[in-house]
Image 1 (cartoon, rainbow, N blue to C red):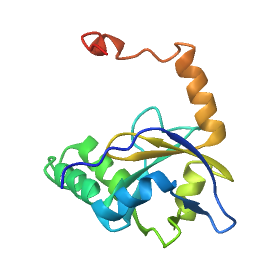
Image 2: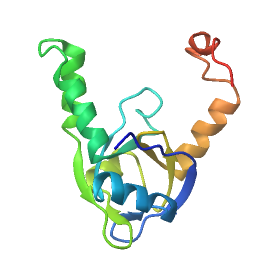
Image 3: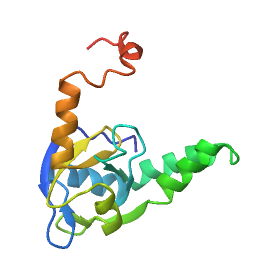
Image 4: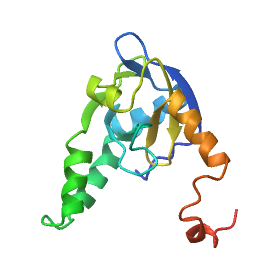
Length: 159
């Protein structure tokens, strides 16, 4: 099967146990592509690290592709080592239950400062999971043009 494509933004409430329910529109695709097997880990790009942390949620086959890519990085490279420790070291296996829910590990919820209200953001082959407050703050930052780094690399794209 080819790669899955996730797009759109969904506001979700975590339940009292720290579970989130995947929106209905993604459940069949997740059942088909990964039999409800998911990996959640800390996000490692500059947009997600810091006081407004976020998490990445991968279907298992997409995660396994990423692991293969990371495994080919030089073992003595410091940045590759940090990436392995941070991304793979914090990865947790999750399985959606029959209602489309899975438990976000407490350590990861604390890392991303998630309480009750969260936002699930489709990123083609994965999702980002943000606290609603952090997402709102980042969205405002992006809309205000305070984050134009790398813009010149995208100038050749047409939409």
